[in-house]
Amino acid sequence: MKEAEHAAFEMLELFASAGADRFDVTLTNLQGEKIRYRPNLETQDVRCKIPKSLELAQEQQHNIIIRPRISDKATFFVQLDDLKDTQLLKVQQAAFLTIETSPGNFQAWMAIASSQGVAEKDIGTALRRTTGADISGSGATRLVGSRNYKEKYAPDYPTVTITGSNEHPCQNLR
Image 1 (cartoon, one colour):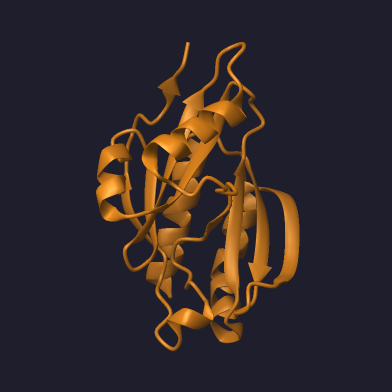
Image 2 (cartoon, one colour):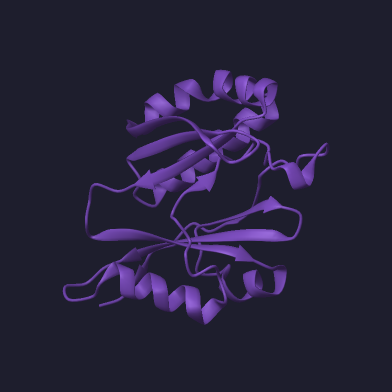
């Protein structure tokens, strides 16, 4: 379990380094139904809860889903979801974080420095369309180190893992 905790901490640190200062945390069950929702938690609060949360999630087969939040409106996140490995190769240089949520299914996360007059939604939609990512990506993701509890993966539920990270992720659109 220590390895899972370390991976989860690393994920939070990567989001924090890209500007996240709060997280919404949702627990869902095997059928994808919401069990618990805790909005707007400070990074340190989430970090403190990780060991016990990972333990309970495994015991109860719950998914831990986080949504990173940024208070500073000069930056925003774009999540590219449901990428295959060939799609991921095209965007991973621009992503501060890439994760594998299930075998062969990836997410890339980008931190974008916004400019006056540039709409976050428009940029996110354009990036999703251009890359072939899921156009309805929600901006929430499974916590690295936790398992992806979906019935289709039973009984060998995959563990969400970090597949890459970049030190200087922020893309300036000025």
